[in-house]
Image 1: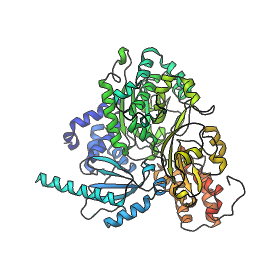
Image 2: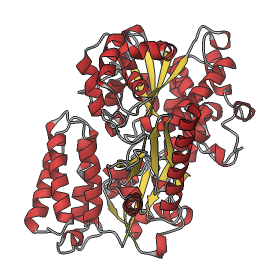
Image 3: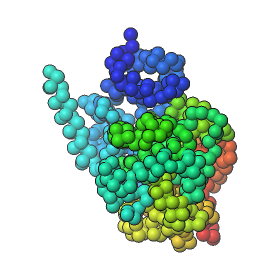
Image 4: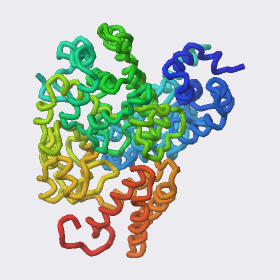
Length: 173
Length: 420
């Protein structure tokens, strides 16, 4: 039983069609993104499912999860706020932004808010050096960029995430 | 006609729409190439234009294309949209705002090297951009500008997007190919170079987004037109990403031959709080760092002149440092980056960046003893020349030039000469 295959048959077909038969393994990263989509991290079971789909070893899949920073093997908040604090952003106040944001949320960088909604992380260059402070929001719907940020508008953004989450929960009830 | 070659959306705002792009002459060059030029002729035009790769290395584009092994097929084209170097943010604007010109460039490049499949490798963070490009590619297929038997010829072309997942090293072309093949992004030993052994072991051209975006207008207006935009040494125009302590950071498209003074003070509006400019990093975090003397500020921005100053044009990522910033902090930040992004394949880089990170942190926290500075310098020079790829090789440039050119920031006596 291959959960991933039965959950996303059409998408997997589309992904595999991008690459020539001898390059089937190229689909491994797109499939890892797919496996991560719902829960925000990759379950161990998905590694063997992907290895079955692509006829490669499970370790060849697992090694990528460790190598690439956008793949996660552990649960975190429903959303990850990833603040760039590299040189150019730091020259424009991103380190202070990160500190103040974490203080306002009463967490340390790398930690998750008590309600499990957001994890705030420090990351390397996101190629938006002219619009610092900035972060990317990684969640169920993919990744989006938020630029020229202040602690105020970031807290508002988090509030919106919280409200839309509660709304969805009520809809499913 | 727009005064821009690359950032044409600045005066044609809807150029991302196919109709507008076509009204501006879009896809005429591709059609003309496919219907009336041999692939070799296209390569010759690009060669004659003097266009060099805009990803950092500055290798002549047409020459690279002519290296494709004609005895091994199929051929592939890969567009490198993995831009991840601190200070670089030009490719994102090009893809966001002028995507069709970029895609037409990829299409022309593919025709020139006989590739029927091209991959655009975007850094994983550019998730939304990849979706956006997929939409554009779809539109082009529906309009008969990509796909099977283009313009009634036998030539067919598919363009695909492929997302990375967060690794700076994948901007290195052979690491990118490994990653695209579904492996860890670790550089290959070169030679063989991608034009003889690339994606899936087949001849492959890898070029940067900005490089490709130049191509349609070069074909449309001719090689001489493009050459005349720049200087004798450096043909054409370049997008400079300006960041750091300037009032108006952003992308600025300038002809080669402009100066840092124009870029920083005219376009960038000068330094925040009108502080004194102190240093320029001409090529992102991996720059050899220059003291911002009058000589440097007035040097024409072109490959040869910047090299003469002791640095490089690179990908045109100009980071400005002002008098409020100490260089020991700057190199702590850049080395943190390289240490994090080292892929771990070769020892000098894996161990060396780790060691340098340890030392730069100590130095920044106040341990500026002569012994410590000398040790850092020794570690850096021992990494140099021993790495598998440019990541490790260039990680030391900022360290060495900072210590040489800004000795006071490391508790050393100032030297007399201008660049240390």
